[in-house]
Structure formats: C-alpha cells, structure tokens
Amino acid sequence: MTRRYRRRGAVAVEAAVVYPVLFLLLLGVIVGGMGVFRYELVACMACEGSRYAAVRGGDWQRESGQPAPTATQITSDVIVPMAVSMDPANLTVRVECVNGVTGAVTDWDASDKSPTSLNAAGDPVANRVRVTVSYRWSPEWFFGGPIDLRSVSESPASY
Image (tube, one colour):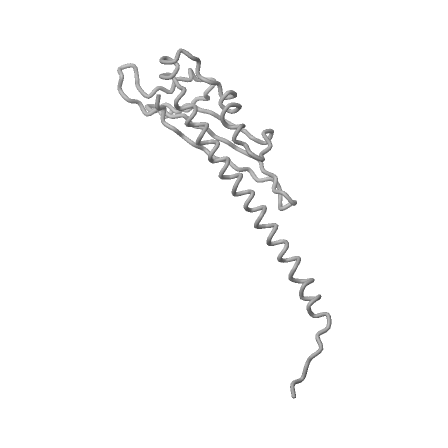
C-alpha cells in the first residue's frame, strides 16, 4: 500500500519562486546581448572611420585635387550611418593623426590632414590615423547606470 502525500499548492509556491528568477535571468541575457551588440558596433565604427580617413590623407589630396574630409564629415558620412539603434547624441568621435617618425599625435582638424604614406624623398613612412569612438549606453529595463563603451582603431596612411 503506497501512501500519497497531499501537496496542494506546492506547484504554485514553487512557481512563485522560480518564475521571477527565470524572468530576471532571461531579461539579463537579452540586455547583455544588446550591450555586446552595441560594443561590437562601436568597434566596427572606429575601424571604418580610421580606414576612411587613412585613404583620404595627403596623397589622396594631391592626386584627387579634393580637400581631405573634416572630422565632422568623417563622423556624419561614415560613423553615424552605422549607428543602428543608437542615439547619435550619446556618440563621441575623435579623429587624430599619428606621426610615424616622432609619434606625435595631433587632432585631425588641427593638422594639415596629410598623413602621407611617403615622405618628401619618396621613402615609405608609417604615419597612422587614429579614430576613437565612444558611446554612453544606458541599459534597457533599468539594469544599472550608464556604461561608457569605447573603441580605438589605428590604420596606416595607405593612399
């Protein structure tokens, strides 16, 4: 003869404990995924910005006869269009030139915008363009305060 224990309401009590924890973990995974997506997007924007600026330096100016883009143009033409599901007001972009010989860093707009790949004698020079993209992300569903996502990319002047 087996004895049956009465457990009325046990499932409701267990569900009352487990379901909120499960729901919180599920929301945490979703918000974490959104954060990873935005971080990867910030890294991609920095890479694309540095590539764009690296091929539009001094050599490109000489050969095309066009002026080099300003940091604002690089931001508006390359970086902001990639900011999918991001608030452009929370996006900060900095474009810099790095001298391959001295290592001196100058702001893109303050420099002559000519990170050439060759010096005056025609010898290769390792000048670089550095783009820093920062984004202040406020996680959805009130999971903590704002988080600063930042990525830096350097590309050699290659035109």
